[in-house]
Amino acid sequence: MLDSEGWVQRMKLFGSAGRNAGWLCINLRSERVDVSHVVTRGRARPQITRCESFRKGGDDAATLNRLRKELQLDRYRCTTLLKNGDYQMVQVDAPNVPAQEAKSAVRWRIRDLIDYPVESAAIDALFIPQPEAGAGRAAQMIAVAAKNEVIAATVQPFNDAGIELEVIDVPELAQRNLAQCLETEGRGLALLALDDESGLLTISSGGELYLHRHIDVSMPGLAAAAPEERAGLYEKLVLELQRSFDHFGRQFRNVAVARLMVTPVPGAEDMREHLAANLDVPVALLYLSEIMDFPHAPELHEPQRQAQCLQLIGAAMRDAA
Image (cartoon, rainbow, N blue to C red; front, side):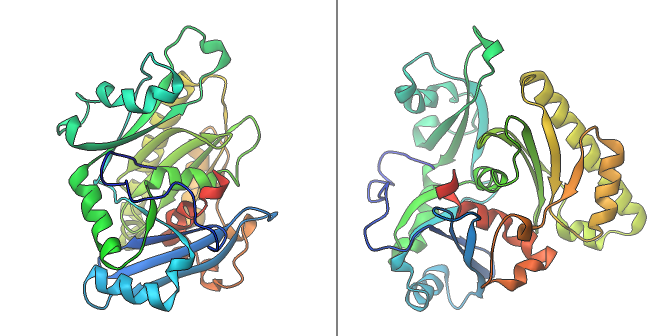
C-alpha cells in the first residue's frame, strides 16, 4: 500500500515466480509474531491455509529469522500491517490532475493535515468512489501518511532477518478486503471489529473503502467490565456508530448501508441485541466459517481468536482487493 522514494526501492510490486499462491501477513506484536496465509484466486471461498502465533525468542529480527527458516517464508509474498498510531489517514479533495498523477500530487494536499513535515512522509492514497449525482463535486481521496522513520523501523527487522516485504498495509484496508466477502451488490457493508486494543469501523461497497473510524472500545475492556460498565460501553458504541452512519448518509446518499457486522466478543449476543435495538440497520455477528474455509486452523472457530486475527487475515487477502 504505502510507497515513498527510497525506502521501497528494493520492494517488488509483483510476486516472484515459484512462490506460493496468495499472500502471507506477518505482524510483530509485543510478545508474539502472528502469521496468516490466505489463498483467494481460483476458489469459491477464500481459504486460510495458515493462521498461527509464535512466542518471541530474542529480538524481532532473531524471531523472524527463525520463522523464515521454519516456515520457509522465502516461498511467500509477504506483507505486514502498520500499528494504530504509526500512521494517519485523512480525507481530502483529489488534486486537479490526471488520475495517474493524483497519488503524487495529494502529498501537497495533506501538508497542513499531518503533524510533521510532509517532506519526511511516506504517502499513498486511494480514490473514494463518487456518486453519479455528485457531478461537479470535487472527487475525494483517502491519503495514508507515515513518517519515513516509522516505515524504516517497520522494515528493519524484516530486512535483518532476510525476509522481503513486498507491501506495507494498514488495518483499514485489510478490513476492507475481508468485508468484500460480506457485501451485498450495490449496498454498503459496515464492519465493526473489536480486538485486543480498540475497535475499528469500516464502511465499504463494491470492494471500495468509503469510511473508517477508530473507536476506543476493546475486546479485553468488554470482558473485564462489570455489567453496568459494559452497558456504558455499549452506549458508547451506539453513539459512535450513529454519528458514523449519519456522516456516511450525508456524504453518500446513493449507497445505503445494508447491515452492520460485528466480530464476536465476550457477551456478543447481548451487544448485538443492544446495537440492533438502537440503530436503524440490521446487526449480525460475523463468523468466519460462514465466508471462508480454514481446515488447518480450527482455533479460528473460537470467537476470541477470530477477533484477534481478523485484520491479519484481511491483510493476507490482497488478491481479493
